[in-house]
Length: 259
Image 1 (cartoon, helix red, strand yellow):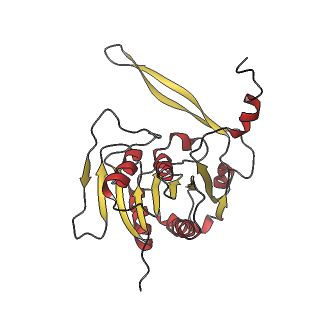
Image 2 (spheres, rainbow, N blue to C red; image 1 turned 45 degrees about the vertical axis):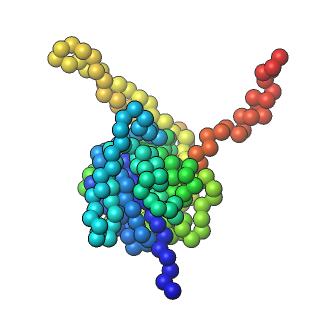
Image 3 (cartoon, one colour; image 1 turned 180 degrees about the vertical axis):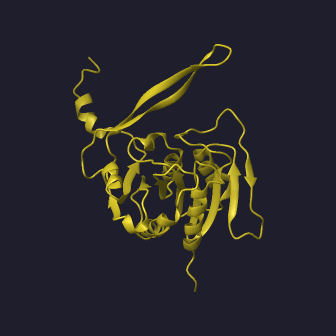
């Protein structure tokens, strides 16, 4: 009896035509049965946004006899996951993978990332999930180097199972396969963006702004994603969607709330 292949949902935030998504499809097609639901246009830095005041559209891109079933969605990455789970898939997928993102989602970037928010949404739905990102914003970045590592991380996740409520944030340094030292489990570095706004004026005299800024890493630890990436490792950070600051509860319970 042949082994049933895992059902894998694939999405991203760079859009359904992004080369990073195509690379992820190549790898996942070797591992399981895949369904692709991705935004019809770039949705970078959308975070966990969902569409509530506009209609959503799905467009099936594949034909009935195609090996891979693909849909484009007019909404956000999180919308893609919600629609896939509730309207397209006949059963809950065994895994959701998001990416490969064109650019870093390490450290604080995980908060803003549409790629990781799609993975987190899958986690909320009880689906094991992984977000993959490459530290290269070039649309024609080399994704071939990453494929063996993507496969390894995916197979390990399927075989060993993630803890409930945990998804993986995986980032790849911009290096050749020979120069990547390995995979390192990390914590999220304590870093931030120091924002600046480039203020300009339209010909009509109206002010407008371009967001700019500098990424500042204040974390000198050698167990962080930023350290791993700077030193030639693939970083893997376990992420949870429970944002409760449990360490603050004892302190807050000492305050005079009801007096």
